[in-house]
Image 1: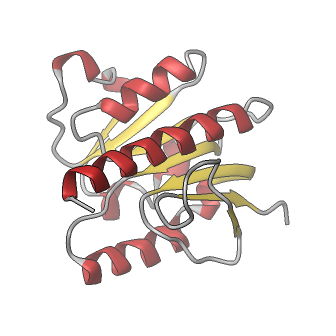
Image 2: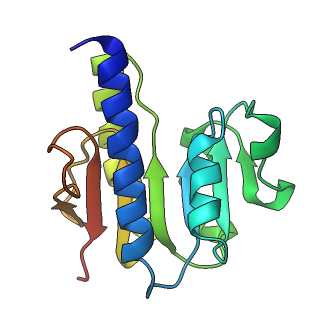
Length: 164
């Protein structure tokens, strides 16, 4: 498969998982957390799908498309290692959804990041809240969910915070 075809499939999987997650959190309270802004495409998609939800964006060095800037009260600037662990004190409530698209081409770095996210995210989520991630996350509080059809397992990842 060409890199272009792989990229297209990843974006299709990302969109399908985000759309599934947006529908699945309809009855849950809480904001949305977007980890990494990039060009702002997924932020724009989330704000279109969830117009009544607060969306907090975490980004070290924001440089999105001009139409995709979050307002200053919802943009948390800085390295995730510094901003995410203390985010609960800044958020109005635990999150209903976290979207993390932070992977790089470096498998070892991705594995370290995924392990850190798996440990850091559960306390930020409302029980029953969802995580959509480009990386697999392994943590007891996170229940893996199958991707929506026709997305193949392993292309993008969904998790629900267990209601312990």
